[in-house]
Image (tube, rainbow, N blue to C red; front, side):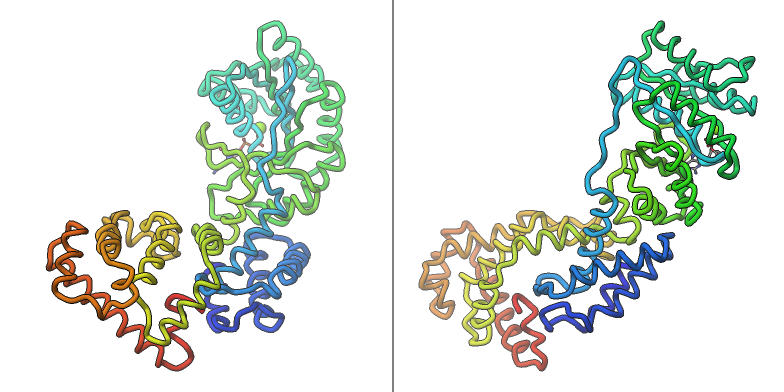
Amino acid sequence: SLSEKLESAFKSLKGEGRINELNVANTIKDIRRALVDADVNYKIAKEFTDRVKDKATGEKVINAISPGQLMVKIVKDELTELMGGEAEPFNTSGTPAVILIAGLQGSGKTTFSGKLANYLKTQKNKKPLLVAADIYRPAAIDQLKVLGEQVKVDVYSDPENKNAVDIAQKAIAFAKENGKNVVIIDTAGRLAVDEAMMTEVANIKQAVNPNEILFVVDSMTGQDAVNTAAAFNERLDFSGVVLTKLDGDTRGGAALSIKYTVNKPIKFISNGEKMDALDIFYPERLAQRILGMGDITSLVERAQAQFDEEEAKKLEKKIRKNQFDFEDFMQQIQQIKKMGNMKDLLGMIPGVGKQIKDLDIRDDAFKGIEAMIQSMTPQERSNPDLIDQSRKQRIAKGSGKKMEEVNAFLKQFDQMKQMMKMMNKMPMGMGKSLFGR
Ligand code: GDP
Ligand code: MG
């Protein structure tokens, strides 16, 4: 996946401190290729990566995260921003509110209409009416009726009427008489953009003045989706996009291209043929999907928030002088604890999540250790060598631990110090990355 690629591309950067023009160039190429693979239009991918390059150049790389991880986060933030940042509101005010559904044949209009009716009814406490305005295929009316029955929403249809505009108007009158407060008009589509279809939808729009005009597009159509969106937008000036069939292998890059090209918000994501498979569109989630990444960005965010560079430098100096003491150790524990639940934290590292899912990592894993350190005097904490037999006994008593436990902990601490000392002597500062820079 792209996030894996980014991490390997940046392996060499660790320790260089900052992302610069040189070390970012290859990675930018990788990102561009990954976006094109995810169906993002090439020109858009290029503009996008140029922006990422500007953003990334000069970013400081803190040691708590890898440069690759930081890069992934920059790309994800930028993608999210480009796709609209926040989820967009959906307008259902009015009695009734009118929602017009448009798009090519097979894009998923009828399926989405059923899902939207179900969503408004079950999540928004609305009384929807579905309207069969696809008058060209008798099967289309039956299809909507079946869906209406499934979600228990009334369907307005008039098979004898050959005028879609008239059907839409009559349906709205019917809704008013029958206490329905949202009218969802499912229209006819063609296999390709054509004048007759556009004229018909435009006429319906003119006649019913919809709250929302939703353009439905099959995310698997990739590049074509952008051209279709542009054509529909020119005629209808739609208010939002519905991206369907995101349950397949598609990465959803079409969403980015559409947003970029027509600058209209994506409002819903359709994820399958079941009536409850409808999601509000959250830009950040789609950005993650396009990148094919785990939850790495929140890990980076937390690390950035908690990491204190000054502290790290001090600590490094102490380790170098072999002065690492219990006070420092306590601070490290606090640092880790501040970053959250241990298991969550480990689980956010890509590839680790699955392995630790069933493992029992207790949040209070550090409790006993903290109790023992707290039972030490300040002198003992900064000078571990002071701790003799009688002091051990006092610490055990103070912390409610057994003598063996105190002994075991002191031994572990000693071994850890030895290890740090050794790592400090290694070439290329390998040891430094343990806690600080
Ligand atoms: P319309 O011609 O625009 O009304 O499209 P339909 O709603 O009839 O959908 C066309 C086909 O795509 C049907 O076989 C649907 O079951 C299928 N379909 C619609 N939405 C989705 C979706 O989100 N995921 C999947 N996998 N199939 C879908
Ligand atoms: Mg249909």
